[in-house]
Image (tube, rainbow, N blue to C red):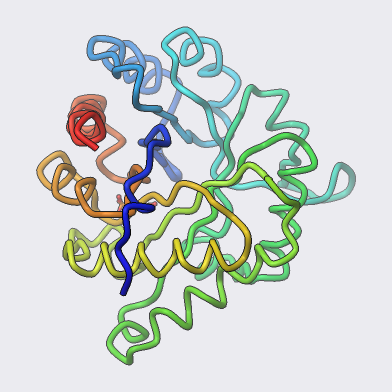
Length: 257
Ligand code: PEP
């Protein structure tokens, strides 16, 4: 597997916190106040994906602290009779720059598959949002040697993506999400190299984040793997203290990259 210098990227690394279905206003305000005590250095980008209900109230306080706002999902239709759904224009209106698409919880629990994921990506691009496309294999797939074919199939949604479309990819092995298990540095390096190769084949050159039980204690090791340009953080992003520690550890690694 090639691990050329191409994978040591000069791009600004991104640490993104995905709160999933957690957080009410008071907790979120407390979080932002605590986060501000440890501002991130300029060479690293920080983003937060709270639940929809917190997008509007957090937009301005986060903007003032240089933290980007993102949503955890989007529906592709522009408006109309889609009860419970949120469209890209609403996310833009709420101050979002990013939107997560293809998270394994949406694939596995809500049954979202490539056809819908493609529509969401296109709707995001048409409305000036940057999708963070999540890809990753289940444990049985890794054990059966199917990791690369699963990733290739998930990345195939990018085949018809517009040239130069704003994009970040997150490699999130499903077996490492919320389980406390993390991929080994060798697995991360090898898989990120494959994803970068696949992206190049598809005509995209973008950041690839790692996600899956990232914590303050393992950030430096994971962010030090070739081809890793940041992290998508779930559980450890819920506390400002642990999220800040991850940001600072990632910033130290990125400064030496
Ligand atoms: C995630 O949900 O994207 C994630 C990586 O979660 P956790 O960090 O909790 O494993």
